[in-house]
Length: 352
Image: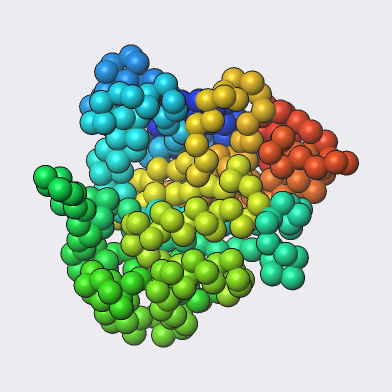
């Protein structure tokens, strides 16, 4: 089976880590008889430098024509002072909108081998954590009406019923494949949009009687993630709350360099990326951790290509690599084998 992958490595360490994910994808292809045609396109800051915009129409068209998109990272201090309308991050919003990607999956999984890196106590994290945050991606306060006044400014949180329905259904579908526990996070005691959100969740819950549904206000949810994270299986929430909670969940796992993400729409086309930033200070130095991007490629195989056993092969290879003591600098501890970006990719590919 041949799949066309549009690569948008972006800025900083983006190209470094994307190269290793592609290396592992080719190892999967060799083992399972697939072909992955990967083409790189300028995106983010490097596109601003070359074309004056963070994403050209040609790149958007190439991404739309692909079977999936693999992203590295965008931005950096170099572009902090460009016109806000063409900041590198605008490329991300434009690509999500252009591809119709309304669902962001952020798994916060802590490998048992890295338990000591978690800031939480052993009795709280136990033998590991596995939480999936399902974040609505194209609505809410980030896309609502905004403006300034003589003495202030405003931002508006708006949601249509259909926008809530489609992300909530994604949450239930994912919960059905996991431990069948769904926690919906809102602020229904204050916000009208959250009151609508909760009513939609309760209505759709009747279609999934096997799933246990909980409702939490966002302030309580943020506290519970630290106090007792193992209570969570799938968290479904709006754009802004999901942005905050998924970052919190990533930190309790111990290393942001280990966590992948997926952005999905109605069909199979998706965009996959690590949750970390571009870290321009270490770009090209062969020290960045590529595992989050490699695990993002595993999510691509699972959610866009329906290749479950191939996705599991990557995830198991990452686990075996950690079992064998290989660590990049961000997860290195005494007694382990410190390796660089390229060797970590080699080790995972070899175990695939």
